[in-house]
Length: 373
Image (cartoon, rainbow, N blue to C red):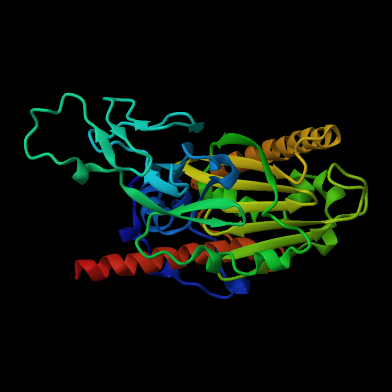
């Protein structure tokens, strides 16, 4: 198949029409290798990307690793107490400064040739460089990246002038009251590799249309008849009260908030619990979905029992999603499919996401063409 990138996107495919008349994205946007590069450059390098929780970098020297627009990044607490973000890339020949996903150190040392950096990113040691001419350590400090905190969650952004994270998330804390995210305790990270394009996974997350067919047990938890979708500038919300039946989260009463923040971050909020989902593209037909689990109580014996039930239940739902998403990817790659249509009643969230993606493509495509002119 001929590779395509943003230069080959049809203007017709970028048009946004009302939901009742709209078509879904072209199948090539899910299957063509060129769009993996387009998504990296035009979407992920321009948006806030979730990395972890502030509790994971509480003390000086604590660090966590992440991936932003296919780039390895490192967040570390300096000896001065300041949390900083850097590319996890040595300025010598690109080696990694840290390999473990989370840890603590007093100094950063490249795992390739031993260059050392202070926790503020300044270069300190360069073994066997005494004879190198016109070399100044001040010119080879670690490259910083922008980071911001929101409700205890840490995000990074590679763009030069990103929108404030608080404006992206505006309205969420107020909408979910009396639930609060800031006091949640990080418990565990679980990751899955899925053989589908990242957009196919996001599409699946954004609608309850498939629940009776893929997740029938979820219909015992969520009141399917009262399932609603709300859309905002940068995110959407799927909301449902519980059915009233006893479940792993509460004795009947309660509600579920499923937030999607463009382009690839989700927050599943239930009583006493927050689950974040981060969808990382790996190739045009593969993504990694990272789940972080947070709880109000993550230590008592009764809480640990509920947490294990939650982990087991969530894994079952995820396995069902993996199976259907991988089958959908096969369909998207077939010669039988190009575009479909939306159910206005059930797929408003999918339409909203796909419209935001088109806007991102168009905005960056126009900027690129302006620079060329």
